[in-house]
Image (cartoon, rainbow, N blue to C red; front, top):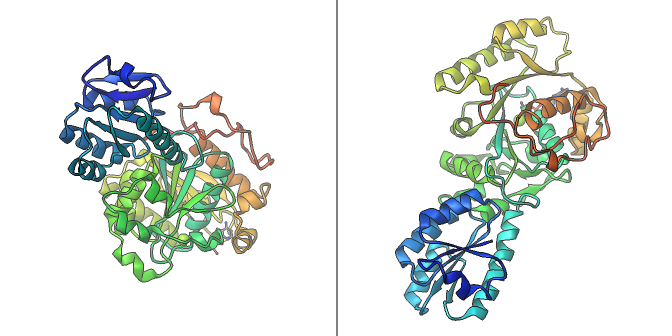
Length: 407
Ligand SMILES: Nc1ncnc2c1ncn2[C@@H]1O[C@H](COP(=O)(O)OP(=O)(O)O)[C@@H](O)[C@H]1O
Ligand SMILES: [Mg+2]
């Protein structure tokens, strides 16, 4: 179906031959917007020649922000330079004379090609309107945030989910080095696009890992972190969640401005605990701070990293101190840093390793399968690692958890 905004319900017939698709006519911007909302696969809107330029431009501007993959073509009875300039600014894909059906036909084809490309930015398929933000955090360095974020991201991507890993440790980010990526661009490059970031802009800073995981890396120079405003990070996450099933956020060991922005948008906060007293104390303080910030308690979950360390503290001590259950226990292993040195997350490199099993079971239970929104038709091909790994069910990126769902 192609959407036509036109006051004349019979207008569909006029353009029938130019648009090789069924045309549905809507009489107002409001009804067009509603039609787009109920048809997320719709990629083309044609605005008829009698729709006022001001109203048409406001509509195009709104669509450019809310559904950047959708092409809007403007029809005018006469093509005037002033109209073309305004249309270009508003974000129309093309402006065509309403009696030039040949040009309209090729404009529709060109626009659809661009739209399909944009819609497929994250690996094909229609944009996901409500991707989930999974943030990995602890206010202490060295506890395993990057290790866990990269492994969870790579595993989920390998199941067919569309996953973007964002490195918000903007000054000292390790995502690129942990995955041995050579990013040509970083979060810093988004600053110039602030206020008008779209799918294409986001794609221009994405670096791909062999696992299928997409990443937005931190700037290579720590000083560049200072110039990145929180609003840029918020805009990046907002756009990203429209094109990815999951946006995994790795964080610095502090409540930075960027962390606060991401916290506001996060659906699941994965907190990393370890078995040492300073780390437990820090986690307790982190939880208190989250409470003070009004962050919802039911969106938090704890992974105990290096869970087998013999250091005098045990799991019960940690649970008693933080008053939260432990959702996964990840043992300590020299294979973890060794996998980082190879640039392949252990979860993919050694799927049967206990570290991989623990993280895979966590991803399956608490992220991939944590929702009633399961869609059996889009089920993935089972455990692509071929391991038993405690994955009770096949993966499917459609089984998203609900925002604020009880964990
Ligand atoms: N379960 C583990 N077993 C062994 N080493 C680990 C484990 N988790 C993390 N590490 C290592 O600890 C170091 C710090 O981990 P990292 O993920 O960079 O922490 P953070 O991002 O919180 O600063 C890295 O060298 C990493 O390889
Ligand atoms: Mg880190």
